[in-house]
Length: 422
Length: 194
Image (cartoon, rainbow over the protein chains, first blue to last red):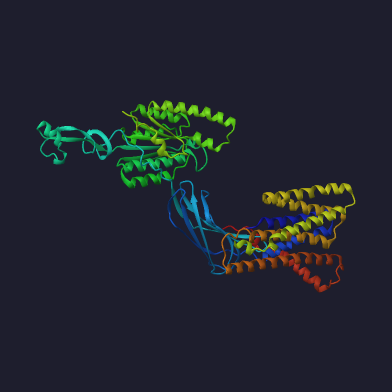
């Protein structure tokens, strides 16, 4: 590869030659020789082609946002001696190097080795690839360089951080026939007292209400409210309109974090959870129970990037075709446009139970802007518009207006009931 | 950190000192120009040179440095080609020192800030050796860049330097042909696709 210096020298030489000929001055023509001589000497010792073998190891291949990952790159020179070689382990821009370095300029003898150790951290979730390793061998006179890219790639999956929602009351109102933890308002196996009935043969002895039996001189059995499980579908609005703010601090990132926390909470309470993400494509995970389902949801959430031109009403189509009508829909949207509002009203009209968690894009934007008088005025107007939108939605759904700077659990605790009472 | 031990302050500050020398040289020659109109005209590229070099120093812009050096060279060449007349030895020296300054700066940049890893004694010795070899090649290139054109000039004017003999002329001619052949035939300066 030719460097700018070699091009500069060639141009200078040509310039002197032309100027000398134009002025008919042989001294100026001779000034063309020094750059040519330097170029000629440079071409006598061209940069050697690096023959490098590299091995990369990561302390972990799956991690969470904000957690550090140690990377070690071992490099061995399989070719001849390299006077000056630059080695760079190419990283995705989302990964920040916390300690050590992924870049070095060294001399490598034949069979010489170099170890680059560094620690990276990502503030955003994603499916990243470390590599390739770029090696550049320099010519001593800086006139040329030889580039080689080693196709050494290591995947690193960074999952979103989990919101702690253990104390949040997240449960579907309508239940399914399977045992769970949601009071079903039907008699069945559970812990909450429901009523009394006369003893029938086969009833468990421990369920006999001895006080009532003694008073009425007949055997009575306690009945309990059955605890069953329900279905929760989490819908993440990752349309382009929803992206406001920075790469790490935007409503889509916060919605993904909230979705993971809610999915974890719902699945831990023995409910079924499903996921719909509206991004460039409409992506969904069918309802299922258990830990494996949480991993499926994480895998889908990791790939969420804002984008897409789809109307939000397409989500309703997916819901009606692939999910039962009696599930609770938790919609994570910043409510940036009326499209989401219309979609929610439509879903409620079809009988879906809808709850909305809305990471406020307004609060994110406010933190990014300077605090001037105009900004304060604009904020107040936009806050009023948002409050109107939320008030409209509260007629048909539960709405949590969430400032992402605060924990989601705190915002959910402010709700009186989840979901809205029947 | 290993960086400060590896790179001697001499290598770090030599390019700056050489640049200061070149600037003083041009100012000195500029003061020798008899015509005020020429001084005014030549001051323009000189001021551009100083402004862009200061800008490149402040903002680390490579293009600003290139423009600054080009303006410096232009001031010198135009001043001597049109006003003062070209004295071959100082002119060759000026061009060679200018090239040497660029080479030295690149060497200093390569060997100074990029050593972010802690190096072993063996690696430091290897790098020291590489630096020494690069400096030797640069010195040889600079000497040849002055000597070969001088001998060529001597041939052209037949007798400026008293060492001119028929064998010298033959060796020099062979050398110039070899240089041209090397530049024409060696593919090392062509871009190589991986």
